Image 1 (cartoon, rainbow, N blue to C red):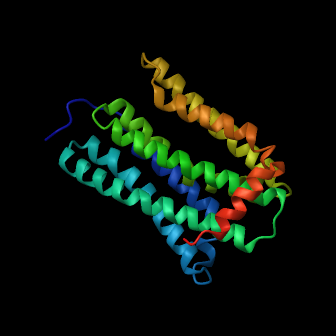
Image 2 (image 1 turned 180 degrees about the vertical axis):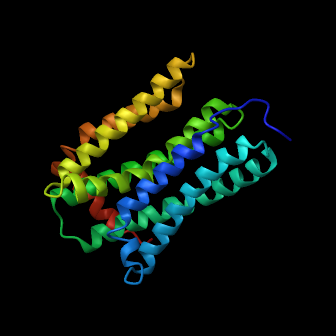
Length: 232
């Protein structure tokens, strides 16, 4: 069975670039120290990497018209998404248990929590819209911003803003907002602005504004403390 219409034919190239950027971001703290890394970090790293590889494979398979395998891998990815989600939650809990409470730690917890929650939202919306290829593809593309943001913030801190995690976080949000805005402009150029990238941009803007204040929110401190104590 072949696809009736070519759509997002080069998406796998852009997603591959995102994967490479993520690998670069995590190279100093993860890939360079694989032997020293504990099992929890490996679980999180492997599941996140596999998700990005699936994202790359799916549009490539679609491009070559093999819809049978595209659907099979699609359903496998849906089953795998909760594993990715669980690994991310475990890492957030590990950070809160092993790091001294501070404003930057609460900011990182916020960044992580409100990265994995939109990831879950985009997966669900992608499934709901699986018969609308334009919405389905865009929602699934949006799931890459979770693991990618973690890599990009590390690149900013390692190479551009070594003295400030705050500046690294700001740079990451600004970059992602620009990228999503360009995707919206591309939709406009193609004749129709669609909901997925608008939803994604609004989520990032809200997070961007909130990140400057979350470290002082008492309810957030209490919530993250409770998260650290959950028996996961």
